[in-house]
Image (cartoon, protein in one colour):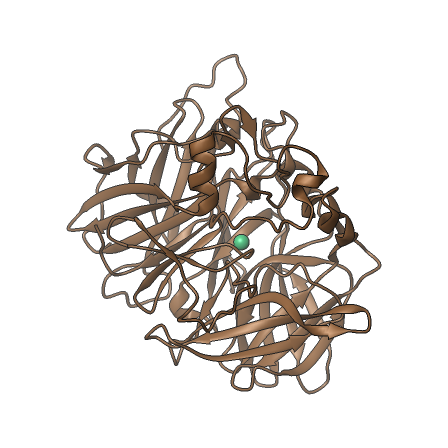
Length: 483
Ligand SMILES: [Fe+2]
């Protein structure tokens, strides 16, 4: 980390990191501090909204900015960077028009309700990315995946698994690769048909084999349409937490008078329901109920005798949505949750929870070769009160043995989801690196920090980019080298 002199003035806020990056780049990073490890070989993909404005108009929600992938490739102690927008119809038409042409999660088409009536939000392909079955996908839970060429990030097109993902069946931004089979599980909120009270809510669950072929689909019925963003798997189960964030008043959305963001709310009278699904039958085998709450992002989960252990970021409100609606508001405060561990007893039906850390955090990640198996270490972005700003400004490492460590960035620097990249020939769970994109508000540029995963205070390299990277959501690391 470069030392900065703060001086008399307040350090820059995170808002600069929300400005557009309209230019697409591809270059070798040849000026950097430290040494790029020889045993770091692979590609680090990230996705997030690359622009929050089109022409002079701001989008009505952070979730509505167009997806821009970037890729850092590492080999032989060298690093290459590139970025490219996903060429969705929304991106292409709004770029041409330099104005809003599509409805979003919190964005209306100009012209009043009549222009928005019956229009579904567009898929901006902006939330996450996965490389599985030989395909690189940009993911957003409001639509189908978008396939990109991993070598140059050019858009191949919308992908429906050879027709197995039906029109109208959405595909989450968060999937999980099974530890034994290599199958990729994903899901989407949907309707299983019409009932007396209207569409019958359900979760569609998809199973895709390592060759990229969808080999099973299932539907899990639910009481109401869920806000369900992420889930976990163990060796035998998929576990969904249906929380207290709900949609109230979808009729207004259909009539065009309201956005989905207008009607999403936290209701503390609704308890969290935990739904455990058998991975082979894709049918519910047990449900648990606990107090009100919501878990937007999970860490890992695993089986322990008759118990299932699930880690995730718990929150008991959704005030964050007000910030997401106007990301440039000076008073905006980005809030995360607290890292909790849930234990589900499949014999007794009892669910218990413990708080693993009191630090406000989000975006938990871990060594993904441990998906569904007992793991020791989780990493996450966190917000540490430093008197300046509530955006992510640090990393937390939580160990099962109770050892928690924190890396706090200096004021004016803002962090992101830290992703674990294993060293070649790794011999331990934390034998590798944490890849952390940091926005430097002083220079209005971003950098990639490469930290030792077993000691997050040990920075082995700092790779400045030639420009800033708009704050992104999620990433994926593969040991395959592209580019
Ligand atoms: Fe997410």
